[in-house]
Image (cartoon, rainbow, N blue to C red; front, side, top):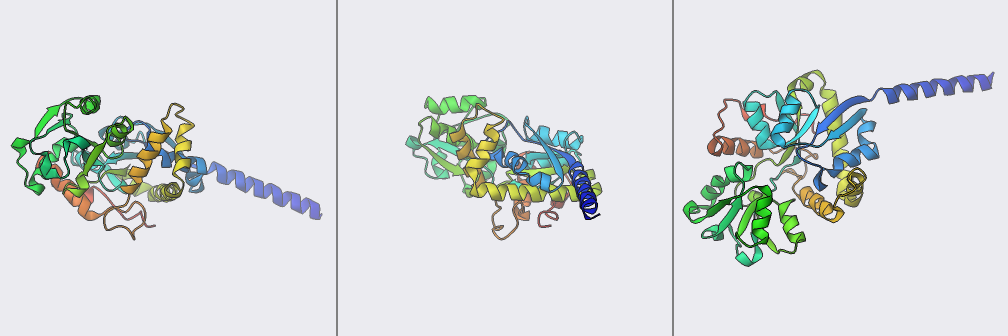
Length: 324
């Protein structure tokens, strides 16, 4: 009889376990761009089972820009999206039903990247220099805020318009003194190719905007806040684990991207992690967003990108689920 009871108990346990496994809720994340080093903690979270532990069956898709990720989430084609804060504001101001729920890169990676031999040690040194930029890039559109904050003479800064890849070429061929780019991207690529560079991060010269945030559809926030909360918790675990084990995170994406330059990807990840926490948020949970950063990002969009909106800044983000 005892043997029968044990067998029955085991059968019940297996059934409950199978039911629990089947209870995984499907969700998808759209990245802001092609998979690179800083994205690696999402894949690591999948591999380590952090999302599964929260009951989420997560799929990750590469992206085609922050604006496109906002459109995809707004149409409910993906559950979550990774975009820069400015794109969330621009999209929501135009009616996209999205809201940021977690900061992934709270300090902007935007930077003025100069050749070390150009002797640009401060933002004032840009006067009389030539800077490569791509028409329409976010760093260029808010550059006037740097001019204003640092009392520069904009007429003395010569911008050369080139495409994205052209900026790197112009630098390597020494046709320009500096370029606009990312601390976690072009700056590392130039250094990898043997060029000594000096970085002036936007966050350090009066122009910090929200870097990368996770956004969700407002319907999802209303109908299924528990899913959003679980996604945030799993992502917090992934980031915390990656901070201690960055090489393991890079190995996770190398498995699905065999041609990955692991050394460059690791450098991208490490730089990105230094930008993860918001200023003043050292004691806050991972993912907390500083309200002042959102206010500044909105003001820059209104002042320099001709954004028109009557929405309050709190319409674009919420911190309510980050600490739960």
